[in-house]
Length: 403
Image 1: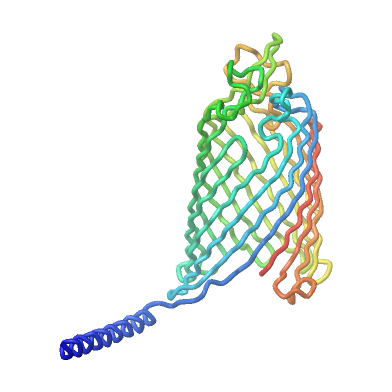
Image 2 (image 1 turned 90 degrees about the vertical axis):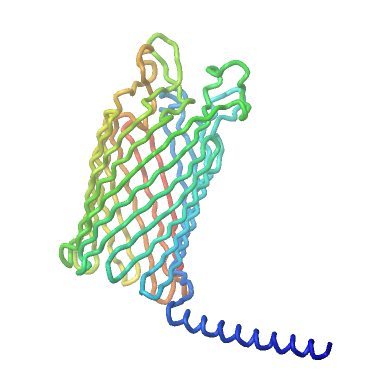
């Protein structure tokens, strides 16, 4: 018996020794074939903002009534990276956005309960993007997923992209494509609900809305002072594109809910340019032309002028002008025809001019802002927005960057 035990012990010692040699050879082989680096935290961006608006053209009450809305938004953006054996850069970017808002107009969906959809809600929309950049080929590939949720809808999105940088690194062409799959709760104004529906969430049906978009951009460093970028971003939507709790009042005194076509094609075409005026001033211009198959056209032009006031601080006055025509199906309060197939009194898709102007301040210090090593930069922006329809809004935002 003793001999058997000794034999078994010898066998296992030889077996474990062989396994150890095999494991050591595997590790040596792995170290030769793989170039391993730890994940690197590239940067963290935190943005908080406050938005407030008011006006007298609420779509919930048929194009009249309060448009008062308050929104506090927060965004956390984290980017990680690493290099592999082939010197390719792998980047993982995660973003979480949370908006908390109150909409006075939504109370009028059901004034009796004072608890309309989205009256006071939280909108959460995270996203995750993975990208691989090859310095040898100049090609970057990316893939991303996203989600969105609030009281009356949820959405799941996917996207992918590819870009190619020229050998001299002066020109880059990029293509992206994405799809979003939404589900809306079909919430009707209280007086137009079928008997028995009431305000019970379980009684609301749902309807899909799908969105598909693509984008092609071409950027070019023309010379040491001028950079330009051309873009085209077509998109297509299908499903429930109207908002069921938007009322429309007709010329005969009756009213119903908003009804819009179930498909919409949009085509924005734009150009962006940056011109460096010496070492302290940059002119950043933008122009976009927009059209869709609902009859809307639009022109948007903007100019931002960052001015360096110290080596590490700058101010940026900016202004944007927008002019758009109304969609074919828009009518003001009491002007829609009851026999028309489609109708809306939503002033967001009416014809108007708008002005957006403000000022930004940015500070970035190599040693860290306020002496904090990795506190790379902060930026504060405040702006005022006005439409020719009478709506006014103000927004203030603060960006903190850790790098």
